[in-house]
Image (cartoon, rainbow, N blue to C red):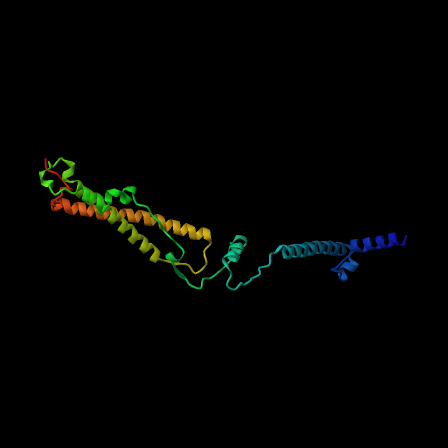
Length: 229
């Protein structure tokens, strides 16, 4: 009975709760009802605001900065996989030569490493009696043709080696450590440019030699450029 009476008393107090009590509400029933309704609205808004504040605080992620001095590559990779969007790792050196972490290998056409560009083969084809051969006889120009092939292979090899040396002597600029994927992408892009520019350089120089030879009507003794019929 006491519990029921207590609950009834609390219910009555809540229903009649008035936080805006004044002289008007004590003497006027209309003002009293208005004050009670205002109290209820106020409490609902207050509880809602406090609930939103509590939820926002509970769900808000706290940013914590952790500094690791001189992390190893494995540590950096683990941190990058977990915190790629917020990880910052400044470099001790802003610039690094590509040759410190890049190696480049290349292969020329198989003929450039064959016996056909060797001095032994050229000497075999050389004939001191070349003047006695008909111009259409391959033996009259064979030695010169393969000497020309050797020169083209040497020129191609030198062009590629110079381009690779320039590439490896270039510097990579980055104030922050790059991930392996980013580093691979940058290196791949630069290597593709190297291939294109080297091919263009070789073709341009070769066309220049052809143009000079053609414009000046230069005739080699071995008849390797043109033939009069």
